[in-house]
Length: 263
Image 1 (cartoon, rainbow, N blue to C red):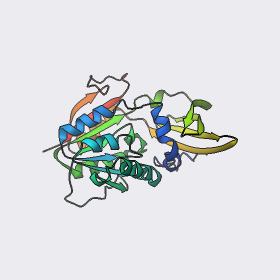
Image 2: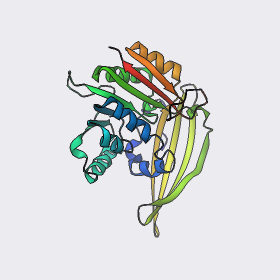
Image 3: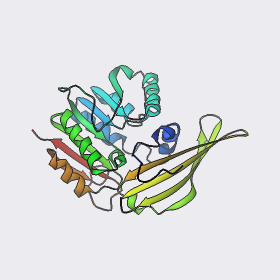
Image 4: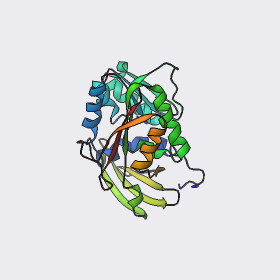
């Protein structure tokens, strides 16, 4: 299951992860960041672009308050689940859902949005400085002058201890199935990469099915992110330590950066 650390890319593993993404996140992050992003959407009162929109954990509540929502992701299995959810909620007509590469956003030259969201450590799946710079440069090109870029970082990646085959979560999965997550964590501290090797064991009666995937995240710091944002023309307006607006500290549970495209 583990990939060569020299060939791994941040988007590897997400297709296989798609069926279990919502199941796992309901048991971890839940909805604690939803109000933050919906409040920010109301504030800009315009078109919102979410980078790495996935299955729509945030896309649906944001769509309900946005004038128009655009979601982009590289994983078609993730996007398939998002489209299904949008249709069921009768919100599909208010959205544009695109499979694409966030390093080079596939929009017309004069297309603009008012808010670019990069939530829940999404930019930490970019495993090189070049990829990170390409994404924030691409975001700057599509934002209207004075438009907002919101970045949410996971601060504790580097503090994760390595372990092998630890039973992390278990619980019901749908109406008649049960899933157990068995997880291993590997660190490449020189490259600041954390690898999560996941095995989802799905049981339905006497049937047993195993799905494996490996996802990778990169440790980023607030000072380096703010420097790179300023380099491409953003002005950092706020650095927060939670979703209620408290000040940032290195020990905060989350790191949220709010920046504006220069006028």
